[in-house]
Amino acid sequence: MNKTKQLTLTAMFLALALLLPMVTGQIPEFGKMLTPMHFPVILGSLFVGPIYGLVIGILAPLLRQLIFGMPQFPMSLMMALELGVYGLLSGLLFKSIIKVYKKDIITLYISLLIAMIMGRVVFTVAALIFTGANNFFIVFTGLFTGSIPGIILQLILIPILYLRLKKVAR
Image (spheres, rainbow, N blue to C red):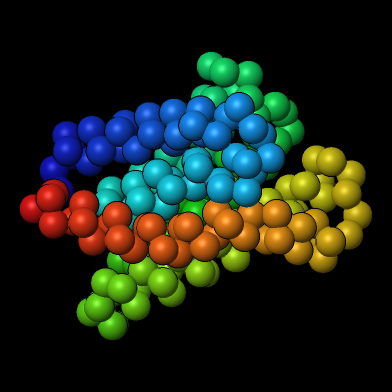
């Protein structure tokens, strides 16, 4: 992929990460459950690679805080770390694992699951540091149980969207 196309797609996925949370913004609890910012970060990393995925993931919550005032600090920083890991790992794992399995769907699920777990681990560690929380297990399980609908949607929609967009992008 040429550099211009890569930068254009990165900007598009970053813009989506900034705008999608507005769909659920009127009901913050709904937004936390559906995790709308995660979708463009992960999809972006699959199309533009792990480094640009990392950039999308880090910039999205920080720019949203600067532009819209949400998420507030320290949540924006914790999300930047989490989404940066999502962007980096989903792109990196996908590129690495596809060489072994040569199947998009298997590779997507392996990459998604590992990236989701590691992103939430990083978020949990950041929460322990920035908020004074003191129980890793409680914070970590709270992240998963609080976002189960979003996790399910990601596991259903991201492979579908990726495969459809891949056909269109050719």
